[in-house]
Amino acid sequence: MSKGLSLWFACSSILLLGACAIAISYNGWIALLLGVLAICNIGWGFVIKAKKNRSNES
Image (cartoon, rainbow, N blue to C red; front, side):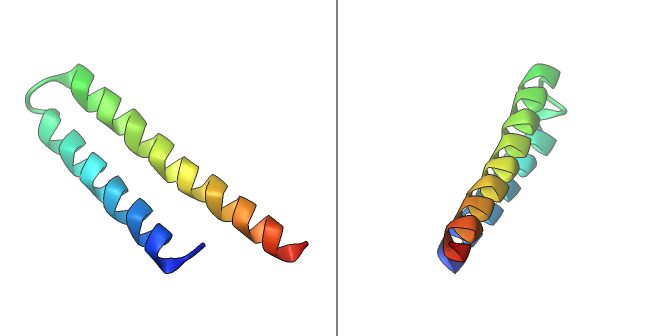
């Protein structure tokens, strides 16, 4: 995975988790939604990394 794409996933995950932390004091459902989105974003980054590594091996 390129450094730029890694940086994108790292920053977007930090922003989502930060928004989740702020939303905890306002609305639990929004915080839950943001937490799920953050976990999906992190997982999507791992999926893309695995696909890139698999294509480079071939």
